[in-house]
Length: 204
Image 1 (cartoon, rainbow, N blue to C red):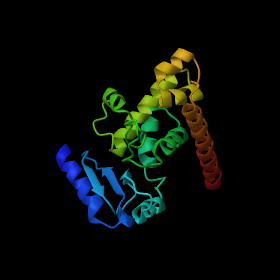
Image 2: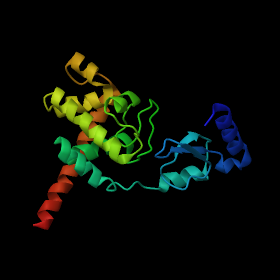
Image 3: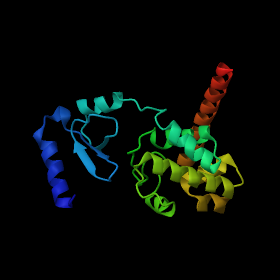
Image 4: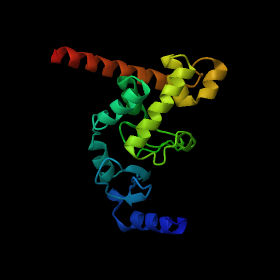
């Protein structure tokens, strides 16, 4: 979409409705096309322009992600690259909360929040395609585990802050975001491992 046309669409949406529905939301589809709405109909939308109060925003917050929807894709990539299923699921939860259309403020994209340069390096043509994104993300996570001798904390720190900086300090960088990220993923990891163990016991 051309910049001028995009601005026109945003201005129209922002002025054509009442203040209660003034928030503008966006999501990117599988073809990379951006869709704008002041009344999102599903959880793939994210706030693009925000007002202080919005009924539409309340709708989005009430839509909970399907946390098991991509289990088959996660399992497939984990078998291929030899990575723990529970670990990958924990990373996805921390990165995107299972939103395949998530875009971070830094430009990371999709379920495993791959940066554009990382997607290019991993031959991920469409980072918003769950299969491609997970396959690329698991492959990258395996690379980090290999580089840091299966040290889980260093590998996760590298996933968040970059492998170069982790290698330079030979540890977790003194970044609050990275420290919180590592702790969060490890917490989710233990949760999913416990669930997996409970399921195995129940099926015996």
